[in-house]
Length: 183
Image (cartoon, rainbow, N blue to C red):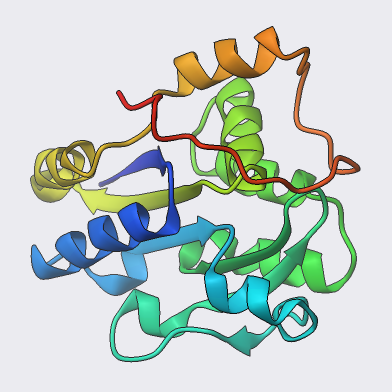
């Protein structure tokens, strides 16, 4: 039986480091997902980055399979892995970012937390999701915790203090400093 573990990180770089450690620990690449915004390569070439299917990554492993996706309310995002399989199709077809929230809730994330995670991506953060076999779950969880994930409850409070009531796909993508909300 597999367990799904999802954590959010303040930046793509932090999330990518966690992905590398998960792969180094022997977790299968096909059981790891990453959704992030922004990658400098995407920001520097927004027109190229906005076309779904553009390969961003290089090398082996999950990071070598990164593709750029236009996600409403998030903007140009990079993603790879099982979590976004259906989301990529939805984004290409012009579906709402609810497909990202749907992918997260489908993976077992509470709907309220999925809303915060989508908002975190919109503000420049990243999400890593892992399907770990029972014998690898504790190791995967420890690796992800060691990468300095952001605290979803603290982010929710911070966002709500700004007047945020939930993820809005019509809102402008932005970049926030999320580093101060580490769990």
